[in-house]
Amino acid sequence: MFNETVVDLSRLQFAATALYHFLFVPLTLGLSVLLAVMETVYVVTGREIYKRITQFWMRLFMINFALGVATGLTMEFQFGMNWSYYSSFVGDTFGTLLAVEGLMAFFMESTFVGLMIFGWGRLSKGKHLVVTYLVALGSNLSAMWILVANGFMQHPVGAEFNPVTMRMELASFEHLYFNPDAQAKFVHTVLAGYVTAAIFVCGISAFYMLRHKHVDVARRSFRIAALFGVLGTAGVITLGDALGYVGGHSQPSKLAAMEALWEPEEAPMPFNVVAFPSQSEERNLFQVQIPAVLSILVTHSLDETVPSALEIQAEAKERIKNGIPAVLAMNELGRDPNNEQALAQFEAHKDDIGYGLLLQKYAPDGDVTQVTEDEIEMAAKDTIPEVWVIFWAFRLMVAFGLLMLAYFVTAIVMTLRNRVQDSRWFLRASVWMIPVPFLACEMGWLVAEMGRQPWTVFEILPTWLSASTHSVTYMVVSLTGFVLLYTAFAIVEMYLMVRSIKKGPDAPSDLELQQLGKAPTQGQLSAE
Image 1 (tube, helix red, strand yellow):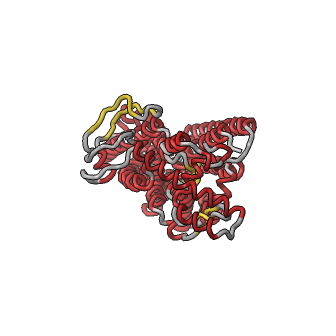
Image 2: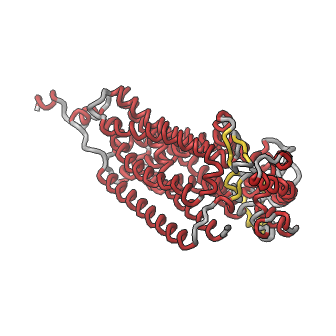
Image 3: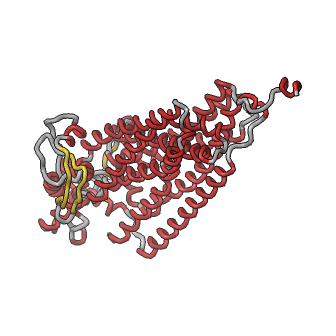
């Protein structure tokens, strides 16, 4: 039986755990690749300082990796515990992707992490470098399969709904994998991880330079990370535009919320820089616009438009009415799978089955034949997600992205001129930049996931129908437990990170000091 409070608490619990987990994921993705870059420099140059640089950042990577795994494991259990109907509905498709992620990526990544950490001195330079690259590959493969699974929720292709079994059954693995939404999201998310790692390394390196500690390690680390970061940021912005273009066509309701676009506009459409959206009044109480920019950004033209919220709602009303016969036919097939008439009726209306299921939330005792026009209107309004949250989360994400691009361009100029260590204002700014990519990633997650509402599988499975039938007490207790546990994980991560950063890189060897010109050579010692 539907309990709106249970559904809301289930959503809140998954959101809380996902937001906590997503604090660790981008840094793991980015640091794994950055470690491979740093170790490549060590292997090519043979200079011991780059080995020490790699080993220092590897220590911080392992702290983050361990806690990322700990927070990620519990999320997959939530699908079965709190979203049992969803798990049954998409298990054939979504479960396949999670299984591949676990077998191909997670085990691969974990195995080579052990070799990477304990292989120093046991493997040759070349073999250890290969292992480090395999860790980076495993981390990114893990993200790829998760994002393909998420892409299916955002744009469900490669599967067909079976009205008899009530399941989304895998029809084409090729279409599932090459889902345009999934591929664009994967590259965008991975590049965001690279930017996160780059700013993390730059910020800590700046911290050392401010205190005149480990300056040689910090200066070299800063330069590598700055070059890495400026390329990553340019990629994030470029792929963000591509993702917006793909998402705008597959999820127009999300796009309407991102742009606070309530009423139809003529081409070229203006862009809302600032707006105060009102969901209840279905309009913006205040807005500042730039003419023509929205059409350019979303359609890449000046003569095309995108649907507004009111247009989407009007279309949803028609699809809801068309979905009613699909629900009735599905119920008949549940009682008699061989009912040819019901099967024919379902085939005629199956494209709108999700809208019929959405209406059941308001139907008396779930009977869609008893609904009124007002209840259809309420279901249609549900197809527009919370506009003010998505509008502002999107703008914060974009603002953070532009800030990071400006930061990295400045960092590149200063590091190439060897002026970074002499500019205390810039070093302080670098330290303060550390939280920015994490905040940008969290805002991006909010846009992606809240923008999909009211669906768990877009236009097929409504969120209200997906949750398990727990009690409110159970959900409150489990939510509280998860928040406390994950907060403890975050505190542990901060403590271990700060302690490791304060310790700094290991002391340099005499050979390294000679290479840096700071230790006497054997000849100098003999002369003395």
